[in-house]
Structures are given as C-alpha cells and as structure tokens.
Image (cartoon, rainbow, N blue to C red):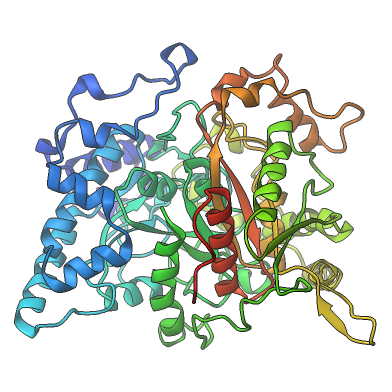
Length: 578
C-alpha cells in the first residue's frame, strides 16, 4: 500500500491494510487469552466492563514487569535507570508489552513502535555503560504520543485514509526535544476524525474504548493518550488541546492532564489539516502532558519548558519556576481558590454541583487554603461563541479535501457538525479577534479587584470549575465544550484533577433545576440525567474530576494549585515545599 494513489484505492481498503499493518507490529506472544477479552459491542447487560485489572492478571507480564509499570513515579524510574538498577531495555519491554495489552482491550494505539523503542533502549543502555552517564535527564523514560505528532518513518494519519502509508520525513520539534532528553517513544495513539471531537473514533482505526467503563466515552481528541496512560502502557503521554482535547480525556480516564499556556511547549509539526498559518489567525492548539500524578507532570515540564525555545520557533525563553511566591491572596497569605459553577450556557447536573461542594469544603478544611464562590462573568458565557467561530476560520476546506480524496464519509457523530464552508475574510477574523480581546479584558475581573488605594490587588490565585457539566457520558453523548474551550481562547493554563469515583449514592440525587432550558446544550445536558433518556447506573465507577485554572503564563502556579487540590481532596499531608 506504500505510495498508494488515493484516487485509485478505496478508503475501506486503505483502512483494512492499515489495521493489518498495525496488528502485525504486535508480537504474537503478547496476545491476550481470548477468555479475557471484553464482549463487543459493550452493552449494559454485560456490566460496566472495567478492564484496568487485565494487564496484571492476564499472565503476559512477569511480576517484575508489573512492578516496573505500576509502582514507579517518573522520578523513581529515572533514578533506577540512571543507577543501573533497571535497564532501559527491561523498562521499555515492560511498557511495550503493557501497551500491546491495552491496545487489545481498548483499541487505543495507531502506531506500535515497539521495534524502534527496543532498539533505542539498547542504544541507551550501551551509551550508559560506555560513557558512565545518562544521555539526558529523561534517559529511558517510556512515553507515548498523540497521532498528530510527526515521527520520522511513521505515519501521522490521524485516522484519515488519504494520510495513511505516507510516513513523516522529519520529526515534530517536540519529538526532537524529547529524544534529546533521552525519552523512548513506544507508541502513537488514536484520535477522532477531523481532530474536532471530544470522543475518539474514525474510519481507519475505529473507536477507542474507555478502560474504566467501555460503555462510556474515552474522550478526545487525545483519547488514545488518556487511555494508554490510564492503563499504564505509558508513564507520560503527550497530547494537544484546543477545545479540551487533553483535559477531557484526562477526566474520562481518571488521570491528570494540563493544557499549558501557548508558547511553553513546541506545538508545530504534524499533518497539515488547515491552511498553513491559520492557527496564527485563529486559536492555536496547545501541547501538554498526561500522567497518573501531578508530580510526574511537574517533573517532565521542568525539563521540557526551559529548553523549548531552542527547538521551536513557537516557544519563548522561560523557566519552570514560580513567577511570584506561592503565598496566596488571602489576608493572611492563604491560597485562595474561586469556585465557578455554571458557565451561563449549560447548567451542571446535580452530581457535578455536589462535586464542587465537596471540593470547596475540603479546601476550606485544608491548611492555609480558602475557597470562595465566584459569580460567573458574562464574558465567560460569551467565550464559546467566539471560540467556535475562530475554530472554523479556514472553512474546513483542507480537511474536507483529505476526506474527499478517497470518498471517505464522515463518522456518524460528525454528520451535521462538520462541513466545508467559505473561509472567513480578514475583516471577519479581525472582528472576532477584537471580540476576543474584549473578553480577555473583561475576564480580568475574575482575578483582580480594587485595593481601595487607587491600585489593584489579586482576588483569587486559581479558579476551580468543572471540565464538563455532566459525568463521563456514554459514547457519543459528550456535551458542552465551553467549560474547556473558553480557557484556550483566553490562553489560561488549565488542568484536570481526579477527585473520586461516581458512587451509587450519587444516583439518588434529584433532577436538574426545573424551568426553561437556557440553550440547546442545556437541553441535551438534562437528557444525561433524565431517567427517560439515560440509565444513570452507567456512571457508577466512572471518575469525577475538576478543572483548575490560573492566569496566563502562570503554568507553574497551576501545577502547585493542582497539587493543593489533589492533596486536599485526598487528605494528604501539608502543602509541599518548593
């Protein structure tokens, strides 16, 4: 199929060949026993289908490999690799095997890179033995990538048939940076068709399933990354986020993920799916890591962010440290969180309101911390409308052309949501950017207030809101992207913090507030709690998460705010010292 002419080969044939090639990259001896594979399609009569336990119970991983993949933090693993306690080869092999298992259970992988990963691990071991020092600060760290990043010799098909079997000839800048630090890339992962969906399904690879409950969405567009990290097939995953594409998969899979400020991490490279330069006129995607702990995210950001400007023109020189002391805005130096509830477009469902109440209570019980209610600014309500128009600035012509090249149809969820249109004119884009600037100015009221002396003072140090106004929903029922996309429009760093699982007790909560719905999003949202339109038991056991947001460029402060929230809701010790 290499070098195929898209006009001569059907998208179905390309997809079949691409899946066969992917499957051929998984060693036969890493196949899961058939009796441990979940039933398809997932149905309520089969139960909730949590498959997180399968990797450690299927017999394919040795006790040592289970320990390697389940018990190490990034810092611990790197220490073991640097001292020779563990070799890069045994660590890489363990994570590759676990990724292969995850793929068979959830369909999260597009490109298994096991052969090149193992070869890379051998080279790292040889270098350590020869030189007596690590290649870089992330020597031997096994990572995975969203399919949209380019890796030399590997497709970046993003689930579109016409992009298959066209391997990249250069790396994305982030990949060169990560390799220079010593990382080992073990896989690329699945995304939704067009990259413009908060689920992960396409015609080439099919749907990625949620390992916690295969009846529910895995999120998108970095859905494969959310799944592979949740299943411990990768210790750190790298995704990209415009409308919520890191934070939503993190929420759906019960892990941590952050959308950094624009310019912190290289975001360039990858397949061209819009007119070149469009993102400079609209809203660029922002890159960030997903991991199972905030400490793991902090560790890799510490190494990546200060070096990013040397590898990519879209990054600026910066350090990974607090721009101001962690002392908060409270009268006695308390770190102050502001709680935002509804965004004015879609009212949160009862269990989500309860979640915010719980987080607020626990923060107010935590040392040197305070949580207060904030009124949602009108500007927040308006953000989603501007964001949606900017995201369609190029008219979708390039993406539509990629699909048309093989006659590939839209997946059902995209029908009616994606269509080719006329690109916006310069005056139209300028008008949208002017509205964006006005919203940025108005949203400053969220953070600062008059000090009574003719100046300004900080009002809150971080904001807590929901990632979605509903629990992790059934497949293709995710609703209301405004809770995440607004912060991208404003270029505020934001992250996902898992709080607890949805419980049977949550099922007993009442109906949403009565009265007229405030939008079509609100109407669809109510259907996710109405017992006439959903079996609420589908939510039991799925993760409930909150979103933490800080002002622009305060990415390190975001990490510390997330650390405080995580410690408070899980009743850990006192605030960490920096």
